[in-house]
Length: 357
Ligand code: ATP
Ligand code: MG
Image (cartoon, rainbow, N blue to C red; front, side, top):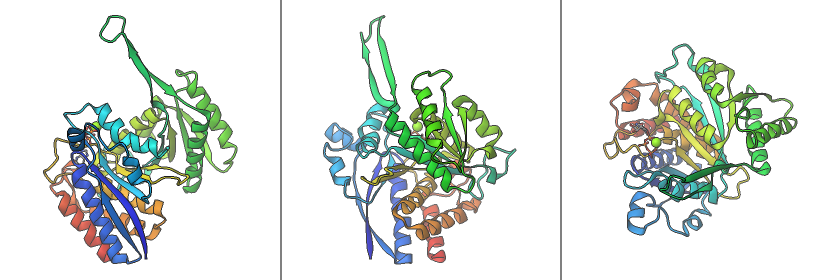
């Protein structure tokens, strides 16, 4: 029987609660379908590791992950450690170390969820945002000079390469082509950012020629936010830069009802390295340790992980189980206005898996 090696990195805050929940539903799937097995290895990296070792993960940490089939990640964030250290020291280290250049973020309004857009039908909102995940505004290029003096200067350079833009455009067009509507919106800001974003637009035109069956348009990022709220049904697949997509995908998650539901995959499309799946929410210290975290974002991330492994049947079984559970308001956690606990939601999903497989 096929055994998948999965690295689990719960990280900080509610990551420590939702990742074990994700492992539990994956175990339930493996047991009930009896078609494959999981070999989980957990790593205690994150804020606690930093306090003991002065770094968020060991120097050679990537070597431990390299032979895994996939990574399930919780969150990195700690009230005592600056955000740029927690982010760059763990999550981005893995994303960049394994060149996971496509960050894929699906958004749908799941059954039973009371989403804020009252003027649209739930089925009008069915998007997948493709975020450039390796360069752009988060390339980490820049610096500070004359620190603390009146003449201090600081820069964060947005660095885009032709190769980097071409590969993310190609990924986005291909993904759009695989979806029923074959519709792609290229998000830009080339009216104000007149170098890199102009190249971004040019490359979109060039790559579009390889995909004549994909309908596509271009939208400025500011206009895209308004369009997401006012005309959600006109969007399907979106591709945007690292920063733009970061912001748009939080908006998308909120429009779908809660940050606690949204999943993401950091994908190496060439499969040279393991890809990493995680809920989009952060460590949420305000609710940690209380058993209140919504595990649905992690479960949906597990669905993406299964799809990536090629286990389409298991992925569908898990998504069906999750949707049956969200459809029942007595199984909603606090972020959705309910009273259910992480453990109750997890148990309910495991039960539906056992019933549905
Ligand atoms: P970080 O600094 O790691 O990004 P954060 O404290 O900013 O973490 P987020 O995860 O970004 O927290 O979420 C903002 C708020 O949304 C949280 O404080 C929490 O109240 C709520 N929230 C986020 N995720 C969940 C979840 N899975 N279940 C319930 N509530 C959540
Ligand atoms: Mg946050």
